[in-house]
Image 1: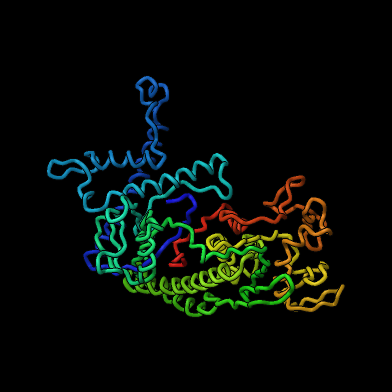
Image 2: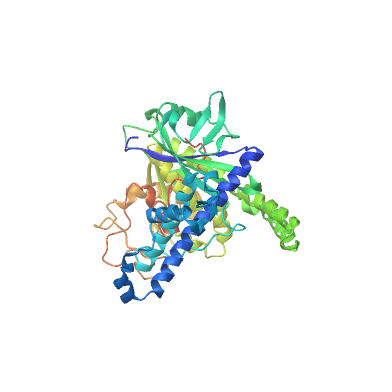
Length: 493
């Protein structure tokens, strides 16, 4: 696979038989068992290391014993344990009795997950990791742990361990040790990419969703999109601003102030909140541990899954369409982690502004569009799109922008989107300071550069025109960079 590649995920709903579902549950239990056993080996080694006398350990040579911490060390430690008498004995054969009933990659991937958790814990203790310090890993419980396991793809072509489509059966995914599993969705697009050597399956993650449904997510490394699908123009593209809101999800306008499109928010949580509350009250009335409580919990899980699916489908459709139809997009960098603490937290979370920015970032890179992230302190709401005058801050109830200098009147969101479209031109305008960045002054305040997380005084300007890379999209919304490829990216190629 060429170096210029992209990663995406195809997700399919599995339709397993009764025997296949039992095998899937065995693999889920094996992954949880391997994680807990590896964690037990780590805790036992740490306890023995703390209780041992350093002088006696050095004399007996026990000081060379290392605590398994990385994924590679954990795999070796678990493999040695599962073949020893400590794991059990069956017919005079030492070792884990049922280890041959599941794919051995399940054990290895569980050890790798624990190794990543331990590495994150160590980085947080050393101060090498930004954000909240991760806690030490905990043991997984069957009732609360995520029901999932992961398999690696070994081999290539017809000898690959994970294959899509078998002969005349197109809607089939073959997994090692599990055989051919029927899927509900069409696999034609992925099969065509695999047949033309334009994609390679790296991993397969099998998990349960709401209602007990099984899904398989195939992590695919694919070549860039064909040039005919990318937006390659000879002239400089005209910027288009995207102003995000709550009742109106986004307003798209050009740099001349013309409103191109207005996208209404579906607000799935707001519309389904009465039903969600009724089901939550019904769940609280059921006796703990009863069958009725289990069924009611399944119904509540299905409602949450429906809300998530409506939101993700809306975001994927519009982010793909905007990346395909516009060559230069300008979006504002919002401090969502701060806005989520206000009284509008539910509406902001329902709109999923951060997820929309993440999807738009990597899809713009796929389709050859340019994405510019305007600085957080750029006054798009207070600035006039016609004369450039920056006025006083507007309250949320004021929906019409009126300029005190040129008497220009426009819709508040349309004016803000137009100012965002003018952002690349305004930053390097003759009226801007010589450094190319405006002073960071909050509205109605005299302090400068006083926001937590921004650069200190004397550092480089944060207001700059640049093309956003994947890891930088919506960086202020989380404590650390997030991956641009999500498991919910279903057939968005």
